[in-house]
Image (cartoon, rainbow, N blue to C red; front, top):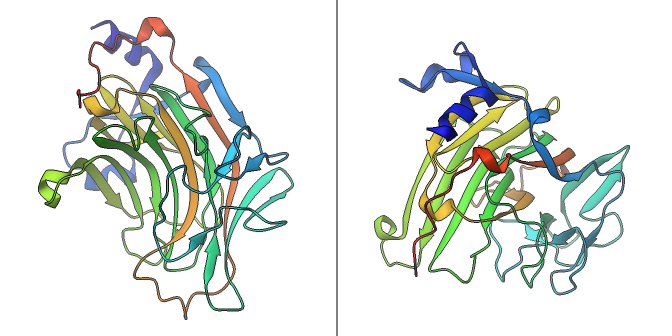
Length: 285
């Protein structure tokens, strides 16, 4: 009850907007004002502090903190000068590019390194301001993974935004729990919602997720677009990932090179401790 009262004070009710037309009986739309929260992490990208996965101590790590990759572009584990990350006028650019050999290379940033040291946060508001690429087949994302990745018998994942230019429904938000099981039905449970939003490649927009013990609420330009119940597996610290991938079914011959994802900032806010009463721990192994 105290959590519900606190959240009502933080979230201002708004009438449904066009993005809610496909949500059916969704709760009333709301807006969020992160100035009421405590800022715990911020990168305005005036400079870039990024290191290799096996060399800790930097704000960001290039590539996934665990051994693995996804999509049709190779995430460079050792960033080179001006590849795949650039800083221009206080904006981070993640660039996907076709090399002379025909291979596509791109970048992924993680807020933890290969030893799982870095920035994590349990609950709170996670936000980034991004201008998306336009090439059909690109797959930019701003997402979170749980600190138990690689250690727990499950992986906790929250996709704040995945964007698919070229598709009719091009914007996806999701919460996932992945387990090491044989069948997909046993391996995965989660919630996701995909819908259409125009002009995300033409200008910057803010993408955010408010994670509480009871609800995970997603925002576009600080207006609610949908929400899901927070899984018990997500009651743990999460780390940040930003990447520009290529879809597995992308037509690489037709995709112009380079493709760019622009990130103005990444910010994370903590909710006051008095507003969070987490009585549920992640499931035991």
